[in-house]
Amino acid sequence: MCGIVGYIGPKPALEPLLTGLGRLEYRGYDSAGVALVTERGLSISRSVGPVGKLRRRVEPSALGDDARATCGIAHTRWATHGAPSERNAHPHTDATGRIALVHNGIIENHRSIRQYLAKQGVTFVSETDTEALAQLIGFLYEDGAGTGPDALLVAVCGALREVQGTFGIAVACVDTPGRLIAARRGSPLLVGIGDGEHLIASDGAAIVEHTSRVVYLHDNEVVTVDGGGLGASTIDAVPLRKKVERLELSLEQIERGGYPHYMLKEIHEQPDALRNTLRGRIDPAGAAVNLGGLERVDCSPADLRRVVIAGCGTAWHAAMVGKYLIEEIARVPTDVEYSSELRYRNAIVEDGTVALFISQSGETADTIAAMNEMRAKGAAVLGVVNVVGSTLARETQAGVYLHAGPEIGVASTKAFTAQVAVLALISVRLGRRRHLSAERCAELLQGLRSSPRAIESVLRLDGAIRELVSRHIDRQNWLYLGRGVNFPVALEGALKLKELSYIHAEGMPAAEMKHGPLALIDRGMPVVFVAPRDRTTDKVIANIEEVRSRGGHVIAIATEGDHELASAADEAVFVPPVLPALSPLVTTVPLQLIAYHAAVLRGHDVDRPRNLAKSVTVE
Ligand code: F6R
Image 1 (cartoon, rainbow, N blue to C red):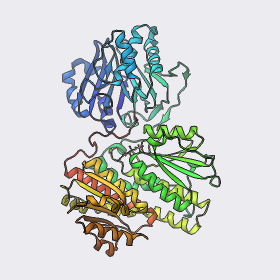
Image 2 (tube, helix red, strand yellow):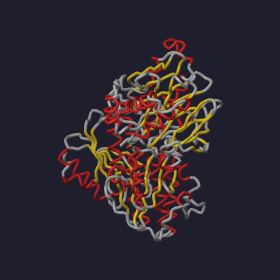
Image 3 (spheres, helix red, strand yellow):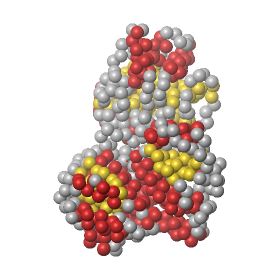
Image 4 (spheres, rainbow, N blue to C red):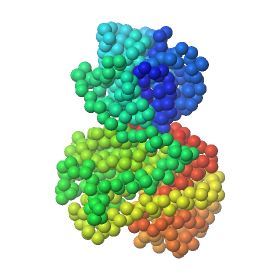
């Protein structure tokens, strides 16, 4: 969701603010804005569209002396309340125009705050929930909620105590030009400590070129940064000492490195990402899995009765693969839940339940809420997370990092394959302490080790896949079918195609098709069968015949050398032979490339698909 940057230090703030916003654009890109604290008051510029448009608007020649301001806040928006427009773009101000605020999250009680303030004579200029908070802070400030240098801090905390919902905020005020205030509840926020300067950001990517020393804010914490350094307290004014941590991110990791799009870079990074995921986790003798992060879990494998895996979108598809793996390899009953359903359902948690929460960002609001709910009910809660230091990573009892590196393209790619690999490691680790034989364990771990090379060989098909897609680019409906562990891969292929190319696509178990969806098939409709050779291949070939005899055009993702299956289809993309249980690691990759090329051929913005944002930090 939205991205926030703040800068205070010796340099002009504009450039770090705009560069930081550019790096956060994946969090939202429908409008952007910046507020600089200048000698003559706040200088605020906003524009609809991506950060590039804002940058053109705030050329130093247009801003004049204001461009030299050394303190400011900025925002890139993913609209929740109020359409993307200049009026609704952040920063928002109070009624006097002396306080500016940028916000990520949702102020749930914004209506009642508005009504209260309207009765006091406050006029609102936008339709946003954020303006309610900006106006409330201004109202309390003017009302003399506090005096002296901390008057604004007192007003900010007073307002935040009234707020229901989530926020990551940065606040600037013309009366305290050398000071910024930041606070969080439910939306990520950190402060970078540079050389005589401080940066506030909703994500380390915005500040990595300035410093790697950071302070992470926890819920209901507020910090002030100024020439004297950083002061922290809770919003109830309890003083805090914050730990300075190291930001695990480098600039090279978040640049495009010669690729036209982040998504293509991230698809091609998968072999190395997987090597990093597996590094140090497979015992050199190849017969055991080391996952240090899980050692702290109370529930021993012998007591383990049930696993629940929850996530959203692509992470939910990885969870589905995880169910097949954990049940088959470790023989533990496993349920998969949408985080958004789990959090509101009265889920039954019995002794011996371990809940795994899967998230690339570690900031998905529904997944965090589901984790809190399961913990409250007594489950052991574990995270499978990519972003180091993210909320989910910090608030679960234990967990496993993906180590896939930063994923910037809005569509998740390398995080999915890394999630599948981690779930395979967890399955083997659990299995080995229960029923899994040493031979099967060694076979699976060897299969995992060779998966990066198998993916490399699929990536060499990039050009051929582009050709294939170009032949079907005018088709508006696609189906993706798979069986067993490749059923979730079919779901993932369909999700990738629809979110990037805006082509309608559905994924389903191959055998379900004849229970209704077969009626959709018409002449030339592309139907992708994710069908690496396994014990269901005969059945899949029968399903292929059913589609072709109704005019559907079958594209098979088949195992190299499987001529029987390939000749049943209209065309085939061959992937190297891998163990059936691990096949999602390779079968997903051609589907990612299909979606990527479809979006490029249709002229869409691959890294910033319409209406979406990278991490969904609102409900
Ligand atoms: C789709 C996609 C989303 C995310 C989902 C969960 O390509 O990226 O479906 O998988 O929003 O995000 P995380 O993994 O950050 O919790």
